[in-house]
Amino acid sequence: GARLAAGLRAAVARHGLEDAHVTEDGSLVQLHFDVAGPPRTGAELNPGSERLGRFHLAALANGVYVAPRGELNVTTAMDAGLVDESVAALDAALGLLR
Image (cartoon, rainbow, N blue to C red):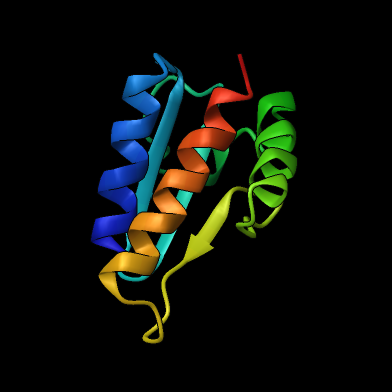
């Protein structure tokens, strides 16, 4: 998940989304919108974020499934090239949020 998380963090920064944060734990990666910083507790999450819903749909439109809560995971079947393709698609999805 580290490669996916790093690519997603770079895309978030490139799009100037200061209140969007990426968290990761092993193969699990999650994108959070409209939060002050990377959430550390459930109380800090914002699952009702309108941008999170829009990102979910934009990612689907770009060929990547992101759970409605903003979660993704990397599987053993994914090589570095596929992760990079996913990051590119997610970068495009983030661009649609402006």
